[in-house]
Length: 296
Image (cartoon, rainbow, N blue to C red; front, side):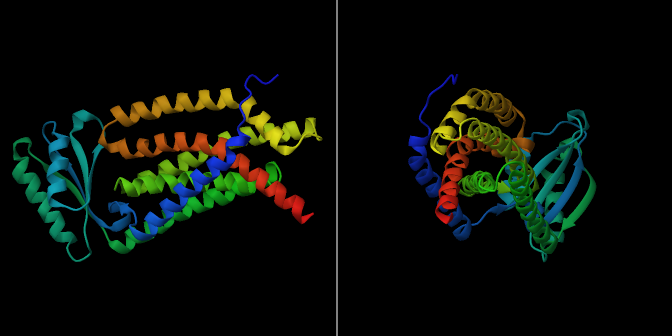
């Protein structure tokens, strides 16, 4: 017997409208404003530096922000090593000037803790653009492979629902990054791939229960079977989401600046992915089932 009896299906029209507004709004922002790409994707300079003592990362980030349009600081190894990787964006024409500026700033503002430049690398804008294209291709290929898996594992009417739900999650997260003017880098692509994996797992559990209910009771309408499946898997969905959310929120709030944006994306992904498993993937099954019936 089903423990819960929420009428999810009755909320589908509202959820579909809300999702459409968020997705279309995110696409509009992407087309008009665009993403704030990090050094990995836009090109720039990378400087690995070691200090004799611990450094105030807040002061370093503030100094970089006041001098450069886009920058990031990443810790290398243990805290005791006092070694950092500084990334600063720049055009192909002034990359050497940028590295000189960073070096002078470190030697001037942080001379008391003896900064030693270990390595300097330059990422050209063309290489950054290619890396950006490869990052988006990775997301597209992940979605395509999942679509093929769902089609083989279930029925073709389920496959589009999973892809719509996953694309919905990714697009909205990108939209939020644009609104908040957060840096979009390789780390965030990794976070989006993690979100895709998490979200599809939730969706597959729901789909598996819907198919199981279809096999048990062929006379009931699909709406009732979907509603029953969502209620039967609700406790599992909520518990999994809360557990994952606790970890991601703790890492986001206490993990430091290096992984801050990564876990911000993951936290958003858990919330939006849970919502899409309930209110995006399921309505899409109904749509394609009606389409299949109309075609027949």
